[in-house]
Length: 249
Image (cartoon, rainbow, N blue to C red; front, side, top):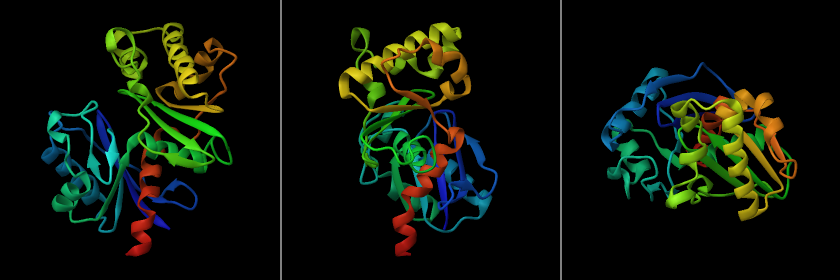
């Protein structure tokens, strides 16, 4: 079954058709810059540009960087404040004409990793982590998604979200060495272990590219593995989210 997935990120919006039986992209992904400011109207037009590139008319799954409940944005997160309470699926349909299924972007990446990557066949409590502009997380129990777990928003010093301390964007902005970033990531992983005692943490995003250099610095008592779906996880998982719509069409 070929479906379409779009991954909305802080710096770019990218999409592609996906074979959801194999988890493979059916064409090279197409990317546009995330508008600045990232207002609802301009973001919707950027999504339309991605769909127009492929002339895609069917249902679309979208991974979106905030808490999403029934297609509605429930938190500002790293977005513009105008997004709060917007029905993302309805806005995108109004602008693009397609039917949309919208879920949290880290949940989408987690779905891909649990079905096609390091989480395949893993039971118990599994946390997938995506390190980018912020820290996204997906939580799964015996393979079932528990949506909207924002572990990157756990509190750090002075009530600051821990993603402001350990995200890949922080590494870039502060020009951290691999050793320095690994120390911050280890703090975050230990924090997650203390809060929810996962059986496994799967790490994707920026850290997956430097895994061999980072992994030796992490605590031995935390079960960590690197993600396998890497940069395409958000697109693949978003497409998976639209499976129900495709069957109903």
